[in-house]
Length: 203
Length: 203
Length: 203
Image (cartoon, rainbow over all chains, first blue to last red; front, side):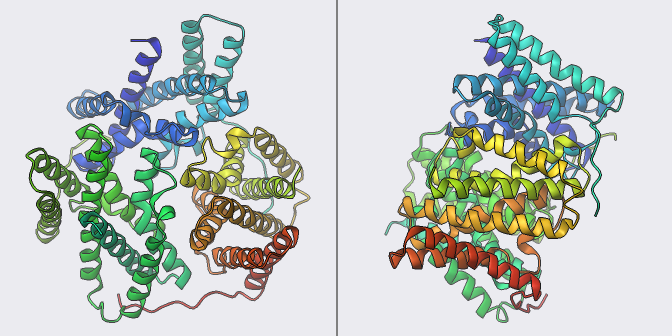
């Protein structure tokens, strides 16, 4: 089992838990919660595979993904009372998923020999799309358009990955650095309510 | 013409009529009604083909699908006054489409040799996605998240199909049994306002 | 550089500007504006490529598209005060994009030897999908469902293209005629608030 494979598993688990938490918050029934967990977990990777043309999409080739989602879903349900500080748990799992999918998207883009700008686009899309689907299905304002920096963290994570990769840095170090860049940007942004400045346009 | 082919045609017709009915209810113009009829009718099968990688998607390979949609659309418009009990007509066509697409999704998944869990996912997605698109485009609460059991009926229909198929039951009987399982679950759920129990989570 | 290639570039630019304008109007941050510009610009073509099975999708094979979007985005930001009459600028760029994507969708459908009805569907979808995504992401009523004729203009544009093409009319003339048919229908529809009549259905 490679490091990439482990990150993949952790990414699926993180987003499945984050999806379950949001769905339970809006009190969907058990099947509805599972649908949201599933969509959040595989959404970004599915978009990535469809755009690249790597079909059948990853979770169809790899049944383990569905078992992981079912497990994460049951975990979230069973421990929903332990996950007291729901907003914090949600932020935690969402951010870990975001960082892991940024790494995977960049790695897959590199292996397919895309241009760096395309790789960054793929990584950012596949990392943030799961959360966007989750929020649209749950009728929340998509996380990507809320005040705090979100997708921008993936952009910087992916750039970090590409720069270190080009400097021939050892792969696990590239992964870990990317992971911490994404986490750090999100943490700092949310902690200090940082957001990008906006333009003013006459109506 | 195979049995599968006939079910396919009936599924397209049912969903096209259900889409037209919802679109006329919110008083879209004729072209808007056609777009909704088209999207409802081919939405699920298009998602299925794109995820599996069977492109061009089915309605591009098979022009008859578009003629069927145009015919169903004209039928729904012409007989809109006969379809007096609109909610009942809508429920009828939506449920028939749901059952037929569950059968087709399971059959296609089986032919592609996917794992049973993946087959059930594909069948459920492709059967319920048309109705979800219809409701999102028409600004209704997606049918899948309303109280009564919807996608759960597809899950049980698909399981019925797989179990009977593994017992080597004759194909038409497998089809008919699946059809009636989906219809029966939906009928019972709507008749007795059955829904799955929900979790409670602290906000 | 072929005529087709030039139209392609102009289409990308027009939709990228139209996306930026809508996103600035609802005061998204700079990254949000870029996401909307990107989604509006490549949305229709991406849907087209995914449905046909021409993956990786066009903007992954052709990095120039991303540079064009970045340039159009910067242009829209820098000149946002010059684009005073925002609604008029928006209408202008959206309509030009619509006409150009109708031409490209029809051309691509013809080259893939699809049935005329399928070609018209592909052209209409790929031309109007960018604007629909833009409006959904920005929480506006999708342009396709507003009163004035929108997608219908693409249908007539695509039919014009196919008829002239079958009459062996010289290609640039086919392109220009299609362009003006789409523009003219939109101009007349918006100028005189034309819309299709609607049906009446009992609730």
